[in-house]
Image (cartoon, rainbow, N blue to C red; front, side, top):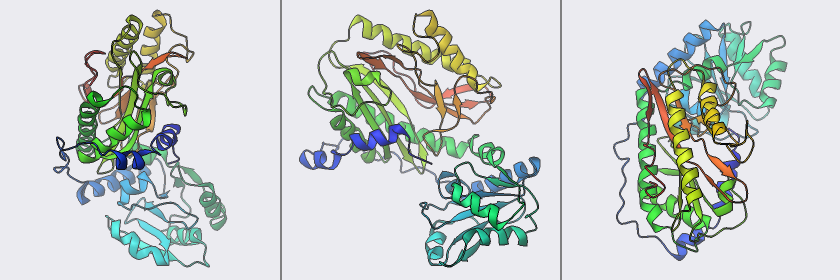
Length: 413
C-alpha cells in the first residue's frame, strides 16, 4: 500500500524522536506489556481464508488471483516481504494449493514466513518472472479463465503478464480479496481490540504528561514510548497544537503547547499485524466556551454516526447522517469549511485505511464483521479543530465500539 499523507507527516514529525528520547528517557516503570496473551492467526484460520477466496472466485468466474507483497499477501500466505523491482507474488488458484513465485536466491527467506501449504516456483535473474506465473496458470489449466489482479499490484507486473499471456482476460480481484478481508473474523477482531487497548492505555499515560512548551514531536514521542512499553508497534502519533489542529493531518510548522490551546492527537499501533486508530482532543488549561461547544458537537456527531451504522445500511448513509446534523448547526455544506472536510470514517484492519469508507455515495451495505473508524471532526481554519475518533465493528445486533468515546473535554481519555 502506498503511504498516506498522515503516514508521511507522522514520519516527519517523528524525526526528532531518537534524539529526544536519548536526551530525556521518560519513566515508563508504571507500564507493562499487555499483549502477552495475543493469539496469532493460525493455520486453520488461513486455510479458511483460502477456502473463502476460492468460493468467491467460483462465484465470480475468476480462475486465479495474483497478489504482490503487502497486507493481502500476509493475509493469505503469512509471507512478510517488501516490494522491489524483483517480483515476488502469490497466485491463488480457484482449486488446489497456491503458488509463490520468487527469485531463486530469495526462496529460503520466503519460506521463513510462508504459513500455508504452497508450491514455490523460482526465477533466475535472466528470466521473466511473469513467464513463471503464466507457466503455473497454464499447468493448472487456468490460462483461459479470467485472472484477478489484486488492486495494489503494480503496472509493470500487469503489463508483463499481459505480454506473457496474450489474450488473457485480466480483471479486478476486488470481489475476492475485498470479499474476504472486509469481513473480520473473531480472531482478527480480538487482535484489533488488543491494539486499541494498547492505544487507550498509552493515551491515559501520555495525556497528563503533556506540558506547556512541548512541541507536537515531543508529545508524539511520549505516546510512542508508552505504546512500545505496552506491547504495541507504533504506526503514527500525530500531536496537533492550536491552529495546526484545524488541519486534519497537521502542519510542518512547529507549534508548542500553551494555555488555552487545543491539543489534537491521532495515534495508532499494531498488534500481530492488526491496527488501532484513535483520536483525542483536549485543551491545555481551561477551555473556552467555543472550544467546549465544538467538542460537544463532535461528540454528538460520533453518536449520530454510530446510530446510523446498522446492518444493511449503506456505508454512505453514515456520512450523510453526520452531515445533516452539522448542517443544522450552520457548518459548511458538503465538505466546505468551517465544518467536516473529510469522510466520516474508513475501513480498518491489517491496514490503517482499508476499503470501504464511510463516505457520501458509498453503496456497500454494512455487514457483521466489518470494521470502521468513526471520526466526524470539525475544523475552523486558522483557529482550531476537534476530532474524536473511535473504531467500531459490526455485529449481527449492530455496531460495537473498540474504544468508548471520551465523556467530556475535561475528561478526554
